[in-house]
Image 1 (cartoon, rainbow, N blue to C red):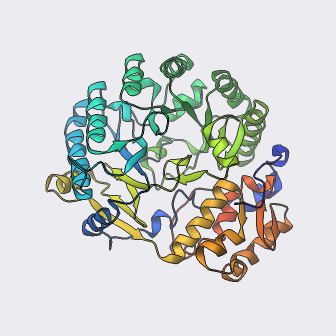
Image 2 (cartoon, helix red, strand yellow):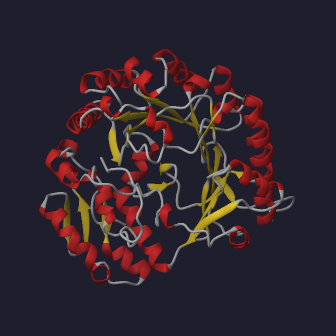
Length: 471
């Protein structure tokens, strides 16, 4: 239990001088160790052995399914996707997905007479999951529900990412029918000039229609994604988008930083760098957005996420039960996560396992009855310790040293002497409160939580890689 309160006054959340000082590239810590540490020494046999070992554990399961297809390319996007207008391409992919689901369930031994571990979380991501037809969605979820035991609607967190341009009233009804109870919608910006520059033309009316349908069908929580730093954005133009979103009143809002990395993501090469806001204007947009969302009653959860005071994320954070995984913040405990589909990553039995990124290679493996794993990482005891420290920092904005000493048999201040030495500068700058028994992230440090977490990352300087800037 944390000895520090997670309640904070948000009035000093944005400190321009500190942001400028600490705004460097770093991981988002949806995993630790981070994905650049994964290696090809981990393969299909390691995955199969791990699945068999954890089959009868009592902890619940989380399932992630990657649907890679998109009808059009959004130029800002850095996701793993396949742009195509050929909807027929989803047919063989769905068949392969169902075979992969059977392969996993068979290896776990889940079949007649064996209920298996309960699934409390399901997430469909992409790409655009609603690229699938309504009947294909029924087939996919039906296969999952046939092979796995799902918690009921009140106790399960079943989410899907949707593009309002690819989702009508019938689709919303089908999503609820098959059990989805959470929805995340991409918007980014409603300004027509910005939308044209990033090739995502999406009207206010389209978005509101889907949101209203989701509410009418009883979705528990609705999130809207926004993005700052896109071409032609300014404080004035983005303020109008914020007005619209606040009027829509979603349960959660994600305000992502656009990271312009055209050397990594080819679609970004279509964005004219001269159209991007200046670094100062980008920070002004962020500051204005934060102040406006807080004034509208949203709570800053962490990183780039906001939620209403009565939302599950807010309550989980207040109770010290917030968790973080590849889908972002979650209310679920540290479940084993099983990934399906190309590029998906699972976290099972203390190891990360990632599927092939190439559709042909993925399909060939599954059709041959092999797990399509091409790399992974098995955590050491030290990795588990540091993973937990970073997790609690990202979720609680505080660390209670004694809790780690009890769980891991260490003397915290001795074990992490190097990290604590680095953190003295953060304390001197008013970003954290550092005490003998723990630390608390102060309001001015919350936007820089990635920097604070980085001091505990054992691998950060060992492997050259490209991360986005923290702000």
